[in-house]
Each structure stands twice: as C-alpha cells, then as structure tokens.
Amino acid sequence: MALTRTKISVGLAATQTRPDDLSVPQDTVDYAKLLSFADGAGLGAANLIFHDQRVLAASGTENLDLTGVLADKFGQVLTFARVKAVLVVAAAANTNNVQVSQPATNGVPGVFLAAGDGISVQPGGMFLWVAPSAAGAVVTPATGDLLTVANSAGGTSVTYDVLILGAAT
Image (tube, rainbow, N blue to C red; front, side):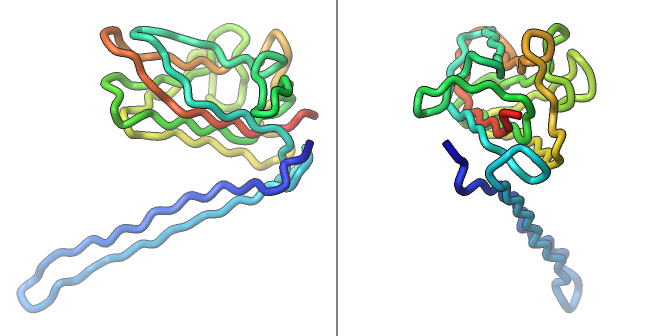
C-alpha cells in the first residue's frame, strides 16, 4: 500500500488595526506553510498513517502503541519505525483538556524533549508536531514506542482526533 498524496498545511491570517486621529494604520499577516511528503521512508517521505476519533473516560489514560497494535483503515496492523507528524485535535465540546505526552517508560523519544514531557490541548485546540527529516522520531519496539493521551480531569469524558504520520523503515 502507498501513501499517494500526503500534505500538511498550516496557515494564519490576521489583521491588526489601531485607530489614529486621521487614519487607521493596519498590520496584516498572511502566513502559510505547506509540507508535502513522498511515499517512502527518507527525507520528506512517509508511508504509514493512523487516524481515529477517540473518547477517553473521565480521568482516563491510554497509550498509543506504535509497533504492532494500531491498525489503519484497511485493517493492516501498523509498525512505525519513525514518526514524521502527530496531530491531536480536542473536541470543542470537551470540558477537560486532552494531554499528550511521552511516558516515562517506553515513550517515543523525539516528539517531546524528555520522558514525562507533554502538552495540554484545551477544548477546541490542537497540537501539531512535524519532522520531515529522514530520522523523524525513532520508534523502538517495546522500549520506545508509546505516546500517552490522557483526560486532564474527572467528571466528563473527552473526545479527540489523532493523526500519526510515519514510516515503516
């Protein structure tokens, strides 16, 4: 199976104004970045994708095991050797945050600086990490293959979308 078209696009458009006596000066920024990935495993390439919408119970936690546990939409079990991108989007209707981290034990190194590091994604927010280099974040079966996702609090469940792009070799 091949990833025939893979693109990551990020943009920000904003206009700031400051009324003055005789004019309204403005500053406009229109920033866009597009990264395309070829099918494969080297620089600027990827050949595996996992995507899903998931729900975590109140105070729930799950480990996304990137070697031999997750399956693609065709039912093929995925074994990532490298992670090239991670996108987590928290549902706007969530009450709690969605926390994404590198667990202290068996975490994928490279997405975060150190074991135990992570980020809290507020309701309606998103987290995007991209590494188009040949190395990406190296996944090692049984010792460096987990990303942890947690519900920040009790009381209510959280819904989140997750997309993980990577390479098999």
